[in-house]
Image (cartoon, rainbow, N blue to C red; front, side, top):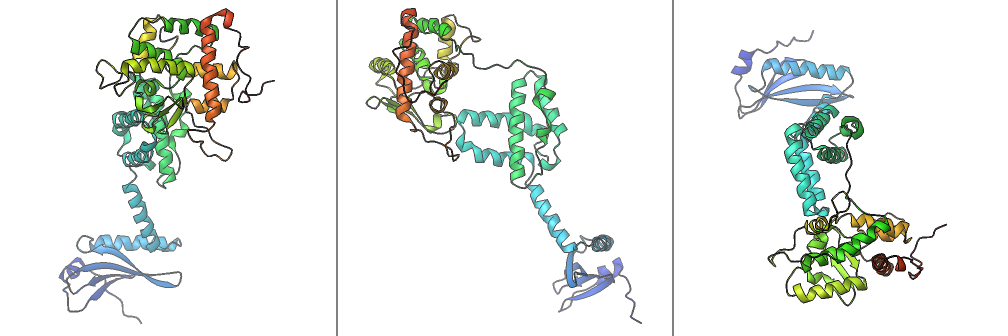
Length: 420
């Protein structure tokens, strides 16, 4: 009959002394205490799984007491009873703990931000960071992404809406969704909880405000005529006249530098750091546009900026064009500087019949080839030069009035889209 092993006691464990060789004292059921020559007392559990003998470490005494070691032995037996390898379960728990340690929403958001910051404009990056710091992190920044529920996100969004920032709430919902999807992609989350939240269901009905724009040629003509009659400073008037001709974003026009213009090639090259999507952009310059720039060169050509402000070290305000439009009597619900992009987009397509992909290129929107690759900044440059000249000529016909409003003189180019 096998000798019965007497279970350990706290007294026996405490009094166990090291020798010149390690030895172990057993508690039964595979659990034993390993005494090392240096005086360490380490809990070990011997077990068999899938026909192989294995060893599991529970930690050291006295940090792990006899009672806790026995409790872990019983937990191990239960895993074995359900056909699980306790050693593998321990490794999985460690991996999960390591993931959780780096899965707080704030940490994941910072990772996501750093990976995307390079392709954002400085302004957009600052806006995203500000919204995260102000509204999202205080709400659940310290929570693991896997512990954040749709209700958590909803409560945060409704709090933002309650202070009258409905548009900000919608934007923040988009940002949170992008962070959650990044967490899914990096193995820290199973699914994005924000997908359960539909903006039209959680937010009060709101009036969507777009950049006001005039897209009816008959209404555009008086505006163009008024711009030519503007009585403000020459620099602001020039910026105002160029806005419909170039239809770039206001910030891109405002910070134009003389070094970016190539009069001989009739091109304006906008550097990547001033573009919304951090990609360089080329704007062909029509004859009418070049004429305005050459007149400006006589006034501001000795400085850095084409449109200098009161001090030549800085450009005009990004609100200068809008302020000039208000001075002319056009309110913000009628037209904005940014709105001329929609004006050009609509009329070039629906009235002049240019191919949509050419228009999108010129608007610096992402356009991809049939294989999904983004076109570079000079794609279709010859066609775009013709389009920009035709656009400038068309604006002249509108300003000239009914006698020249007919567009018979405009060329029928292959870059026009086919219409039935």
